[in-house]
Length: 590
Image (tube, rainbow, N blue to C red; front, side):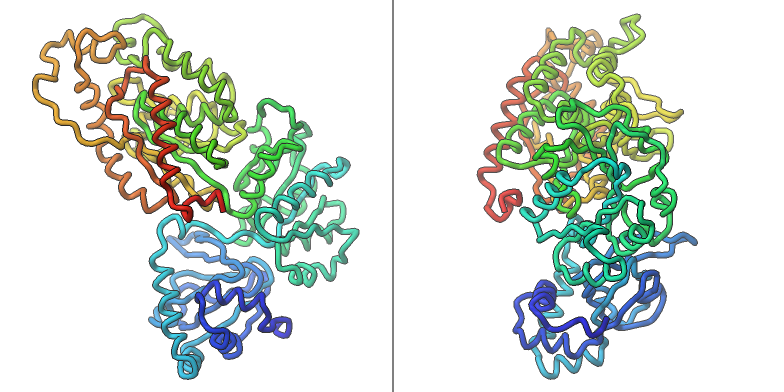
């Protein structure tokens, strides 16, 4: 492997991306002075606790960082071509904090302290370049630290080889080339198994390796050299595990196992998937995707996911202010942005998942908003439970009728919501199960809505613990996250005359038809419960690509009679926010 690397334009670009615009002579000095080391699949580059001082740069292949904690191996992430390993040790001589193992056959450029001094003696500017590089690495924000490099080699495991999906694979190839890199499809009939590795290495873009398990040796080599495994199946076919999945142990929990996505193909006219859980019972995949054939938007979404460049949208809680999320998303989509994942808390969960459930059909979404606002009991389930004999609350009944028996796994756009588990004082991320039940748990604000019991655990509103749940979005292959908060208003001074002095005003404060102009009571109740969570939103700004707050000070938390005006406010404020963005922050336009 050592002889295959030369100081060619590909290597030059790789080093430039690391060290910035330094002179070509310095880059050549780095390459010539360093030592190229090859690593076979399963071999360690170094192990946790070892005292070493080398910096490594991955020239080809893929490595994985693993940390031993309490006797368990925790996967920290993968390291791809062009990424460095161990840069801090070059200066500190501290023991390695984690082990690094080759996920597939790889090569690295090694530089130790002695070689570093040799380069600096000849090219003093390199010291500044490397220092600048290390500082920039340390300054990465939370989002940048979670973004992984795109896979170079993707194995396509087709479970129904008797069905021809050539057109679909070609459309994926074309989209990958249009959006990102030159892409090549490799099939058994076109490539010798014995030369597959060399063929993959020779192509500097993305490699798609098609296999079905009919040729065991070809499939084995495709999986061996893959960075990502994409299992492709017709959604209407048998959901039982296929021989190729069993024979090659696709879902075994080994530290060398590749990330595995399950792609479920649907006819292009499919309205909505149903029964996805049956596909996932025996397939603990990293991600499942619903894709419609000949559906351009779905193909673009798949392309972004395969290259770790997807867009996540996180929506905060805020009672009926959540109608503003509908307007905000309208403005985002109208600007040309496409959303790949959605997460939310409380109102953000209701309106966000309602939008993905409707596949962003805003005529349908407006009807949902209208029906929600027309409910006679409004959102006053607290008093409904006290003064009514109804077995089911109004909000629960509405949510159940809206989502029916659909599961979160059935959505075209993967979505999640969060709630607070008061049984063990933890944040619970809901990304599977009946939509109505998970969403209901996310907006069960204590004192206003009853708690929800799921699997013998008691859940209340997610806003109590995390009113803008960005962290769960890092589980997905995202590059950009947009977070929308409903708390963008100036503090309001309230005199004592604004508070009710009689208990008979308490019920009125929660109702739709108010006798008293008394907004303070519900605001105090909600704000006191979500105070700590809202303070966390300040930290969130460093975790996302775009963060903005909708100013909805004049909007009541529990009165949804003016929902259309709230939607309009959300649209107009988001439109204005986007129009004021510098061009460099409009990542979807690049």
